[in-house]
Length: 217
Image (tube, rainbow, N blue to C red):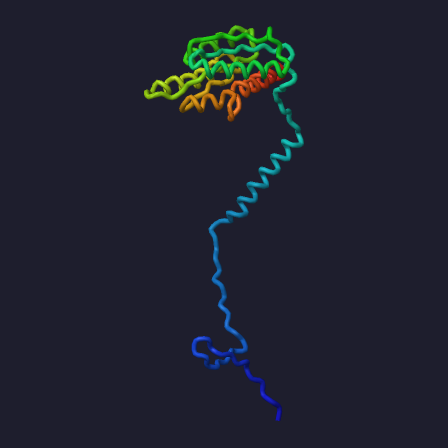
């Protein structure tokens, strides 16, 4: 008589007693989930549209305008420097002039104007910019926080003033005014371990002057 097939026997973990595993285990059918819209398809369609538009732009080609640090023949610069906190601003000015020399800007094409403090820098920069004699104006100063709110007033006025000077004159006015918590911070940014912000501002002035002269003039 042929042997009858039996279901495999397993032991229950909880009781250590044998239990019979059914030959056809029951399976739960997952519930169907429906969405009122198809967000993924909409997103994909949107992305596809963007890709198609970018393809058109790339196919049409575009110009990239950028100033140069080497194409500076004949560029003229005005430098407005505040005397207040002179121990700092002199170092910033020195860094700026050395940078101009390093990038072959001639001395006769640089005009340095000294003013009492950073508050007087913007109006002077605006006047130089409107004169039509300069391709860029570099603004140098140092505002260091004290015990009163005078710092905030001067720092904010200097920043917004230099911006408005450039917009009004139509000439790049580069902000090289330090706003620091103490003298150590200022000296660190005037040739110390944080570099010389006057030199960095001079590089910006050269690039912006080149951009305006050769591409946007």
